[in-house]
Length: 237
Length: 237
DNA sequence: TACCTTTATTTGTCAGACAAATAAGAATAA
DNA sequence: TTATTCTTATTTGTCTGACAAATAAAGGTA
Image (cartoon, rainbow over all chains, first blue to last red; front, side, top):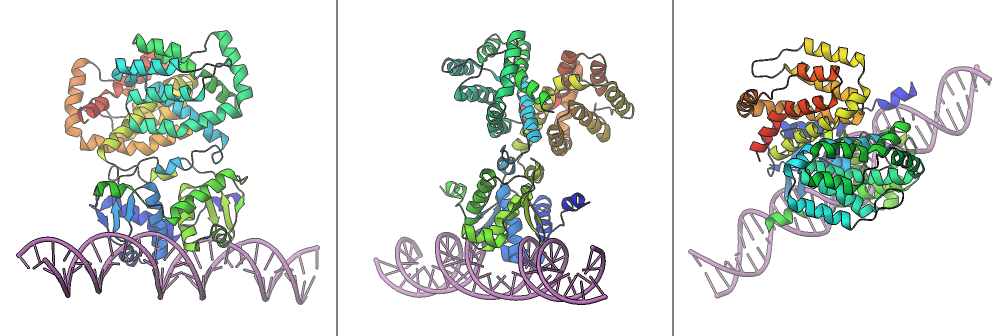
């Protein structure tokens, strides 16, 4: 019962005002760049104290829906979709299951990206990837040095060409690093197992599929490349 | 020049306090369920007025990192990753390019999801999908009635089994509906074109691949199923 | 020991005040 | 008239103080 009570968060005035402002921005003709009535006017119109209004406005500012130019008023702006999410993607805030689901999310995305990859791939892209691989160091435990590990995948996202997807990967990446460290002892035996099965896929191999424009081969190899994470996740649920 | 000035948002006290609070929550030992010092104490510690502190706290409440039980204090909570994003995923707020990139994002995800789909697929799932298709209506322009269109894809996500991914699809779905309506006149000729090329893929066909457990066939068919959106997007950039 | 009363605590809300910097308008000089 | 300087009004950012309301804790009573 106590647990139920906790989930029923009473709607404060600030919550209501936030909702009203959002609806106002969505339903009125105000578009990006247009100015918004000043705080005193808004507070009077809605019928709340300025402090309450400001708490609601503060939320919208964080999301990037509005911007204030001090002493000149507020305007509506085009938000980046991840403004809110950025602040909470952190293993110290999210619970373990959520972290794993975010990893899974990212892997799913990267696999789904393959067709776009081959659609856009240029010779210059291949050169850049080759460079990244040449400068990389592959440790004994089949892990790359952090920089090239990141750069290689980031480049794949860049080629696929969706900025928001790239931004997502950038945001989620630290979770992978975290999991790598925290579950090192679980990942290593999995990698040994995979090695025996011949399912360890290096960046070099992925690159050769790209070079030969073998989409199916690449996709399958990429799936194997993520196998250690998938097995780890399976073992933790 | 003026344009540059606008992008340099000065860091207000509220922004700084928000940052400090986030770091505090991340770096201290406080975990989900634990209580947080009260407002007066926090304000005094940080050295700002309670109003400023409350604006920062208000943001964290919106993200779901903290919760307040009126007159009993604040506790740290486990946020849903989309609390912030939910509020801005709306075609009336996002610009056209962002809307298209979000659609592309979703399609990428659904394609990447195929292997999980076949990993988890049960006979009961097949029955449910069959039911959805049987109750659906396919119009002349190769579109389904909105309910079964949604239910079919939502069920695929459910089978794939990642809750966050499902939540994402649910959130982004309205953007598809919006694009369908707004670009009706552009989509129809594309569909006619696709019909001639024999690349129109119905839910029924997708279902038959599922039933036969043909992952490659299904994946290719799903890619074709989204071709009209991909061509539309290509024509708008 | 069980029940009732009182008190302290803490968030939610309101009101008012002032600084600072800009933009607009007014005044002045060329 | 034109260009420059000065003045004023506007608006956000920040601070202070106040009170209601409801809970939890403490104290008192049967």
